[in-house]
Length: 450
Image 1 (tube, rainbow, N blue to C red):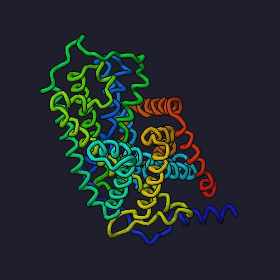
Image 2 (image 1 turned 90 degrees about the vertical axis):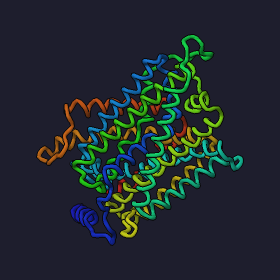
Image 3 (image 1 turned 120 degrees about the horizontal axis):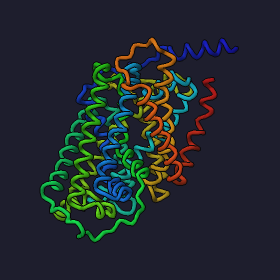
Image 4 (image 1 turned 45 degrees about the vertical axis):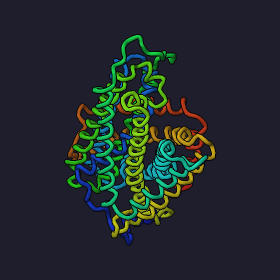
């Protein structure tokens, strides 16, 4: 009986479904635009105030943002080895499957489909709705209306095809970088520098570098999504590594310059007490029209992040559908246009349900952060551990890129992931419990794979 069951599972895994396969149509520039668009989202407009409050000094602010870039580089080096050695549309799903077995990979795919990716789409949509409502409001539910429209339109765009989604992403990333460049220019060149002792604000929070790092890495999050385009990027053995290194370099440089601009134009005390740090900075140079410009820039940033998150998110569901019979209907890749259509539709539907949940709690963004954070960091830790396990288990495997200073780099990154998992459980609320419960609801599907 056990032999027959194993045989059936193998046949299912290698069965030729009536579906097309992903094509290597993503260039290096496309990949960089995708990663930059994923990472530089709403976080850099929200988190600098928290970081300033929890470091307390100008030097501390710059050092913690630089440390965030270094930590992200460590993680990117680990993912570069995984993605070049095992280029697969399932990304983390495939690494976990090879390292830990099918059951854990299925649980991850369920978590990504119901919590991690869909929760991220919903929280980004809430941020977009908040800032778009400052430009034009629809009433009490304006934020949710904008969130629903953004998810529906961008999901439809990705279903139409990868070419259209790539083009939009490239233009959004370019416009975002140019807009942020203008904010940096206004802060460094045109805002009057803050004179020591003239600020009316006072630092009241007790400095905590650990908590500051949590906020910093939240703003750096998203570069790992490069794993999900490894089967579609041209010349993956070369371009995956290059796209990660270029992207993190661009992101780190942008974040450091932005914070230098904030510090020069506002000072660390005013940064710490600001409710909208970029808007406050630009307002000093351009007045209220400048604040409206920042609102538009945040809308642009979140559109870029939502589009990229939708694009990469459906890939795991597609991989799950190819492996597991209850989700077989997700494992279809439409040849014309080239996209996992059913996976996109399911992802969009779940994200819209989560928007409804956030609307009911009246704390959309906070609820979604609580909902996703512990699950995200828990599986991030396991994905990094899979690199170490696969090095031991498959020593003869050809690895186009090998992590330098192995095993120090992956161990250091595992420690960071473990700390952030602990922090996300300690500092988050009821949303974290809801996220854990939803993941546990996937256990019946895990049992069907054993």
